[in-house]
Length: 183
Image 1: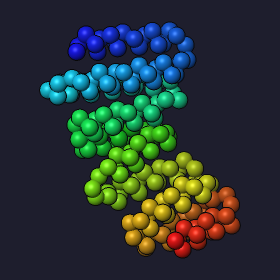
Image 2 (image 1 turned 90 degrees about the vertical axis):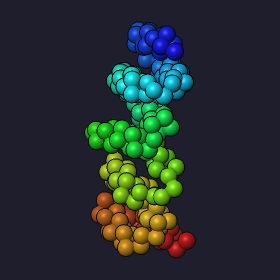
Image 3 (image 1 turned 60 degrees about the horizontal axis):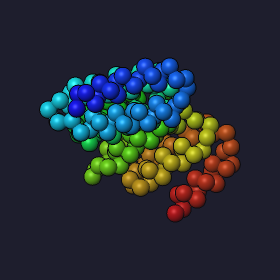
């Protein structure tokens, strides 16, 4: 196994010398995740550390795939180490400036796998999306739909008022909001 991991490590400089081939980089990262997932569980700390370094290096080189790579690592950590470890890593990534939508979507996916909804974590994720696109109605309406699903009716008015202050097309937002709330 260690030889297989070394082969993948050796592939990284080749990717760097091949130019901006994001597809190749993504495929090699996927291969690395598959290889690491087959290791015995007694070496998970080492594998996670190596994968984290690999994701960091690849993310610096291929900025467009950063969120996807981080998301793949989060899912792997959740599968191998559990939700607590995945959430710790997610918090690290989400704490950086401007986390990608792909990363936030993966975090939503992790939370959706749970039997009980962590309302505060979900709100934090929605807050990140709204912060990235405050003038767009879509993230606001998604958050409102979530609050409705959770029967958090008191929070709807707060979100509605906040959205009205920031969305570009308030008429359209109000119309869409009313349609969502009526359902």
